[in-house]
Image 1 (cartoon, rainbow, N blue to C red):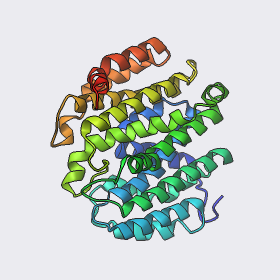
Image 2 (cartoon, rainbow, N blue to C red):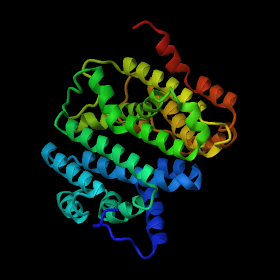
Image 3 (tube, rainbow, N blue to C red):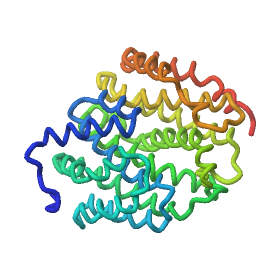
Length: 329
């Protein structure tokens, strides 16, 4: 354990904070993470918050690429225990004093709480989480200086970006699920690449959905010269791999299946909305209604243990994506 992080006398208060702040910084993950078995819900929730801190630094438009790199490095060192957590928190809050999202600022202020929870996990989970945060933090630092209005230089760089911000999370989830479920460990063997596709599919959805706002602030995470249709076709292929990934989760692991299927389904429906538009100027135009989200949430309760229902949903909800992929480039 990092000696700079003192154990709390009331671990329940730490967990209560984690649950509360999760609902404040992400409505989607506050919906999906509680579906997981209790033994891994707290691990995945904690991991999400660590990734959210990295994302907050990334999203801060007022910071220069150099400042983002400095703060990302300090955060990673705090997670790995090579510096005190305060050596990250103080300069980060100072740099973000003009940042508008008070919930994300509160999360950064409570980095010691998040790390205390991390250090209660089994060593095997801690090692996997540290690997994920290291790859994400180093990867984002690499891309901080590559933000341009034109976009990433090619498809390979786009895939690399999607890996360091989300594909690596797919790998981490696979490790956590495998530590918990011996049945999943057997099923996933030889198919580990599908985990990366699962994470990348969710990230590509975010990139396409957020592209108008990114463009407005002079940034693009799309590959230069690649059309929306071409990107949708790549994302659709990643969704197909994601479906294969979810189907490798044993049917009796209903919580894990629901967690993955809910995130997957929301991505499918969002990409389908994008595919039905030639262009859009605001992500609100392709945002799913709260009603749609809750209807699908209820559906996952029925479908999570039923492979036929999951496949039927994917087929029905991706008709425009299929049409686009069938066309010759």
